[in-house]
Image (cartoon, rainbow, N blue to C red; front, side, top):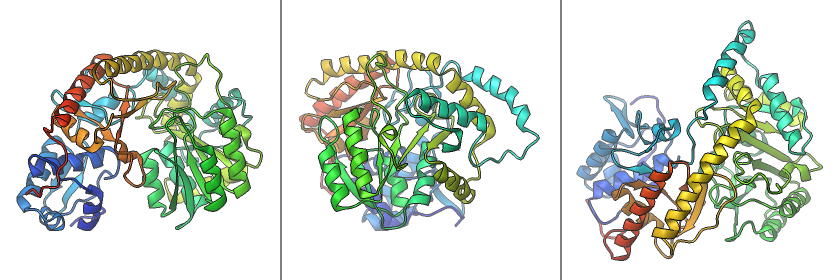
Length: 481
């Protein structure tokens, strides 16, 4: 049966949730499986239950599961080999790859627009950075290439960026990782154990939820208000649940786009310190400030006097997702501990990628200015289209980041996702950004695609919304085979 990890039929039923909708059963099943892949809840290369086993677990005919798998194979989301079963894949040159790699008119398939991933194409300076990095690489070829802390020159550049933000930092406080997700996984490996309570804001980044679930922690969710963080509730949770750790996104939060104020940051750090808790602050979006002329709150760690705030960041959002380089800023003692613990995970980050990241960071302001101009025009195009075609949807204009967090004016997000997919737009329901599957009146709308694609996507969403309100589509309790 092969050596790939297998997801059991019962676990698949739990992940799928209420997948049955009006229309062909196989199409509804395929759409839900596709969403699980795109939002990260079905990892790449995981082996799926057999068509027969899944049919039994779901209580449907084998014809339904076979047709669903066939559809996903055609799209590239499932690959099958004789004797090895079927496993999760991503389309070669398909939706995900095209969005990240760039190109006008990014789509999820013929005529379809994919709004499931908040990611930008590579900046114009990428090839220049690669060329410079390639020349620098010769100085490393005589060594082993292994450095669990990271290339010293990159660590110095990252430390300097913290200095420029008003947070004095030494090279010894930086650990280079293979992206922010890897940084979070490494920190969880060192700082928490099974059953430990961890405070998380809700909504938040679904892949962070997955990393926390794999660490078998106990979630302590702190619901956000419509205008930002409920700091009093968070302080109360630190008193009552005494979380060992917290994971927060204070800068252009994913998915809401909120920016935590300086006063709120000070209050959060004080509450965590009283509880003896560490705080991991994800600064992946911190560089994507579309209005940099306005006053910027200090980094969360600037309020910390006890070394309990740990900052993580990466190149993925401000620069390019295909450059898997991130970092951790923490105390020197913890940095050494992380470097030692890393041996059991991945040894080190590729040297060439670190050198590319270093050159991009050195070009920082010119690259970020390009990104700001592009994102501002696309954000404004999306906002204008929503005001015109979906005036009942509510959202706050984010100062930075990559997404709008929209309330649907009473519509059900799961039903909208299904209706939108039928109309040629893919998006993720708000429930994905919740620990317990709530928030199903919201959707995340990235503004990373070209303006004309975003305007077209909104027209299609408006048509899907109208169909739902007229009763033509959406979820149903009717059994289907």
